Length: 52
Figure 1 (cartoon, one colour):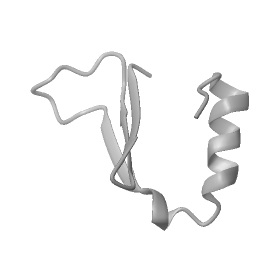
Figure 2 (cartoon, rainbow, N blue to C red; figure 1 turned 120 degrees about the horizontal axis):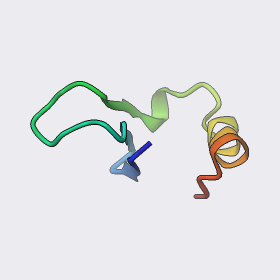
Figure 3 (cartoon, rainbow, N blue to C red; figure 1 turned 90 degrees about the horizontal axis):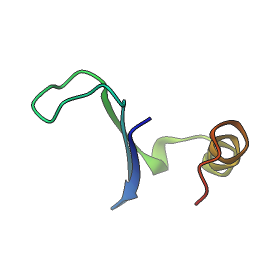
Figure 4 (cartoon, one colour; figure 1 turned 90 degrees about the vertical axis):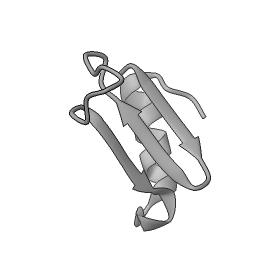
């Protein structure tokens, strides 16, 4: 992953090969829509080393 952000209640992910004009490789979803958001953050930490 190139960029992962959480802002205004929305997670945004960008793949490392995505360009600024391309819609491919860009993903976003509302934090409130995650059934177990805490588990998601733990998985990001343990599986990818991304700390929040």
